[in-house]
Length: 253
Length: 326
Image 1 (cartoon, rainbow over the protein chains, first blue to last red):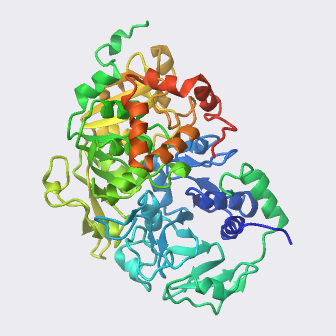
Image 2 (image 1 turned 180 degrees about the vertical axis):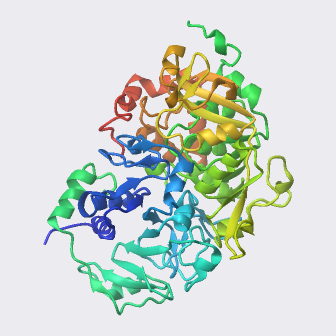
Image 3 (image 1 turned 90 degrees about the horizontal axis):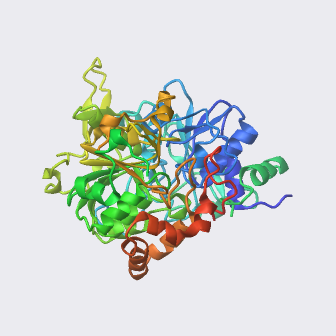
C-alpha cells in the first residue's frame, strides 16, 4: 500500500465529499488543497472561488493566502467582497465552504477568535474573516480540524461561526435560511452530524486508526457505532495531489 | 520630470498627504487584504510622523494593520480578521496588543464589514444582513459604553429586527451600523494624469471603503497618460473627483503584493514575523525599516535591487512564478 501523510489523507478525504457542480468557497492551508483535489479528481465541474472575489482561478501555483495574486490569475472574473458573499449565499447555487478553526463543539460551531475571556484573551486568533459568513450563508460547511481535547471541546471560548448551534432546529429558529456543517475532516477520521439531533458522530476512521484513538482526543461524548474505515488514497489521488496540486509541497510540507 | 497639470493640486509627497489628511484620533480604512495591496508606504509614514490614537476600520487586514498597531499608532480597531496568510496565521503585534489589553477591539465578519462600508458609501445609516445570528460576534461587545459615545462610532454593535416587509412569519435580519471613516487608504496600480484610478485584480472592499470616506489618499505604482486610462474605461475604479491626494510610490505596497507589478516578499514577511515576536527585536525592526529611513526610496534601497527583482511579477500572469515562498 502506498505511503501517505495525515495531511494528504485529510485533503483527499475532504475532496471525496464534493459533488460535481458544487461551488467551493476555499480558505487557506489544507482546505485549499482539498478544494483543488476535489476539482481535479472527483468533481471536475466544481468551481473553486475565494471570498476575496477571485472566481475559478487556474491555480497553476498554490495560493498562500486568499488575497494571493494567484487567486486572480486565469479566473472567469475578478471581483470583490460584496460580490463574493452574494455568491456564497446565492439561492440558486449549492455552495460548500471549507473552514478551519481553533475549537469546535459537538454541534459543529467554530471558534477562530480567541481562547479565554474575549475582553482580555489568553490567546488571540485572527477572527472570523469570512468564516461566520460562510457558516451563515453557504449551503454547507466542511470543517478541517486536528484532533485534540483542547480543540474538540464541550464549550467554545467564543462562537465565531454558527454550526448547528444547540442542535435540533435551533439553527433555523435563530434566523438561518439554510446551511450548517456537513462534515469535520480531521487527521484521523471524518465526523458527520446526526439527522435530527445534529450531534456530531464518527463516520469514518482512516486506515490504521481505531475509533478509540479518536475518542481519546475528543472532550465530549461521540457516537462511534456507525463508523467505517475510510478507503485509503488511491495512486491517482496521491499523484494528482503531489504532482499537480502542491508540487512545491508548500502546504503538504 | 513630467508634469500633470490636471492633478497638480492633488499630487503630493507621502509626508504631505499624511500631514494634511491624517490626525491623531482619525478613523482610517485600510485598503487591500492580508498580503495584497496594503497601503504600506502611507502606514510607514504615519508611524514616522508619530500619529497616535487611530481608529482602524477594516475587513481582513495584514501587514499595514500590524505595523501600525505595533508602532503604537492605534487606539481601537473594528475588524474581521488579522493575519498574513501563511506568513503569520495571526498578525503578531495585533495578537500581543489584544492579549495585553493595549487596544480596543470590536470583531465583525468580512461580509459585515464590507456591507458597513457599502452602507456608508450609499449614505444610509445601517444595512441588513443574514450573517451572524446567535454567534458571539453579536453577543459579545468589545467597545465600552464610553467608546461607543465617541465620534464615528455606532452606539450599538448590532440590532436584530423582523423583516418589516414579511407577512409576520418572523423572518429576522441583522442590522449593521454604517461606517464613514475620515480617510480611506488605497494602493492602486494606475492613476491617470486626469486623476482616474485603476485597480487591477481583486478590488476587495476598496471601492466601498473609498466611497464611504471623507477623504481618500491613493498611492500608485504609475501615473499613466489620459489616452491610456480613458481608452478602456470599463477597467477603471474611481473617477478623479473622489480622490483627494495622489502619491506615486513604486513598490508602495511592499512587502505585500501588487498584482502585475510584484509578488509578496516572503523573505521580508518571514523576517518581520520573527522580529515581531519579541519587543526588543520588533523595536529594532521599526528603527531599521521605518524610523531609520526618511523616504520609501531609502526603504527600497535596503531591500536592494536583487530583492526587488526576485519578487518582480511576470506582467502577463501577475505574480512571480516559481518564487520561493516557504
